[in-house]
Length: 198
Length: 198
Image 1 (spheres, chains in turn orange, purple):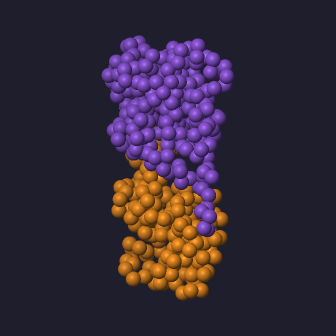
Image 2 (cartoon, each protein chain N blue to C red; image 1 turned 45 degrees about the vertical axis):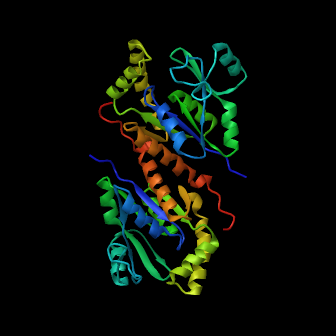
């Protein structure tokens, strides 16, 4: 019988690159699945329902909230975002590891349900790099970018409640370190069972 | 100014392969140095003074003990083994990481001096694999091998006091995971300082 899987939360300010890191990680690491979030915002070009997000109407989202169907949910920049609870719990109990890309406050909420979750905080290399990334994305207005910059400063204050912090400078380096964190955490003595032939 | 380096302790029963893992690790990971232990036992074929061990007479060893020159020391199978304190403290304060190959009890002693040390426990894949390795080494008599097997059982009881446990089946896999543990621990939020341009 497999043990319980491990829950990894990858958080960081909007523009920290957590989405890219997550999708690259999934492609290079075995035994781990990505938790797909639900959102009421519109899909960005190239985003696919069920892969990038479950895109929902506000009505659908609020119905699921009422049924206790989210591990956490929050309004972010005027839209609702949430983590459907069912798929995460099912994967963990099958012994699969699950990684969750999530905003900072949401990460801390999930940690309350899963005290053993591994929390990774991603920051862009500098304030100016964050600003450039948000502008290059071209999906937010200038006032919205400024709001996100201010919010990023607040979020950095939560770093001490995270287990790991990575400066996301070169994406390939960041992915390599996240992989290492997962590998290392799989070897934690708290998760260890002595093989039968001992 | 560099922060304080990190101390990693690699422990395991005699025959777990910790020596081989350590020397391979040192050759493939940058920014880490191996702490060289002192011992009163005779060099095995191929072992070099100052690289594998500081080989000392019992008189020299006891003199250094009296001067508080060891982080830990212990009699093991009739010989004295110890970790000279000076080189470890100096490397750490220069911001270098130090890895220490050490028996299980010694590792726990060092942890008392360095509460932030990262403890890794290495076990052979099975009891029979351990026995084969000790026999293949050809340096211990049959009664001595039996003594080490019994002692290994006692040592396994200390696993919960270690941070990580690795089953040393394929040496290259083990080295890869130890590298990951070092990389992951370097990204611990407790060791993190926000870059200046934030």
